[in-house]
Image 1: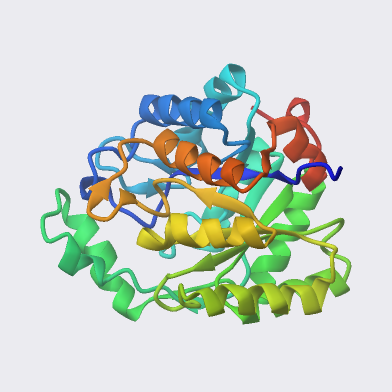
Image 2: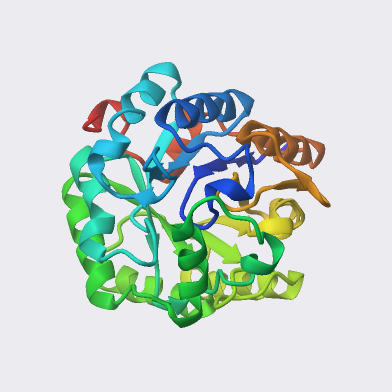
Length: 310
């Protein structure tokens, strides 16, 4: 009898895509991030993808001092893999975005694999009431925004991360990003099996249709054969449907309030853990086994929690 396939659930706890007043359940303060992260890990998330926010107004921040209050607390309370963003916000320089990963030397960090339009402005119609003026400006400015991730930027993050033993969650928003990753694999700057997070439904990237998902899978198979780990991230209302299709097709899955505020049509998720429990139910109904943090470390070839700097 064949062994059950182990799938990694990543939970993106809070991030730069959504603004704090769009949902009262989005964690903003360090204590809220701690509590939501621990609950998500207990629900089955083997990997926690973490951003930081300024608690005064919820503005995304890559100041390492904003990460310091919650990273050790989460690490001491659970054994989940902690994945620190190098994406931060499209409005930040690559030097700003790299700072937390360089200071804290995590096991895993996210890495956007190409420059792209990053259209957040449609949210203005769906969420007309915002608490802070910066939020409206943040969304409005995305009409004229290129999220800069040049080959020089990507090489700098890869090279500096490798010195610390950090591996990467390669966030691929379109097929060109897969080709960019193949370029760096060919140059020897990516060791081992890349962990490819295919992202669907962001305006400026590939769409959320099932044919888009399968096209990304076919392209990755053509470029990397069976030498990669595949995960699916669906933005907004696409989160659970696309993750379900991905799981049935051989992927891991990413959920979390950074990527979607919803748990069902018109129904806000009350926590990250609620989304983790939902996708775990899907995985187990498909006959899959949810990976533990240590199993995720083995699958992704990570250095171990004892080798981080927090």
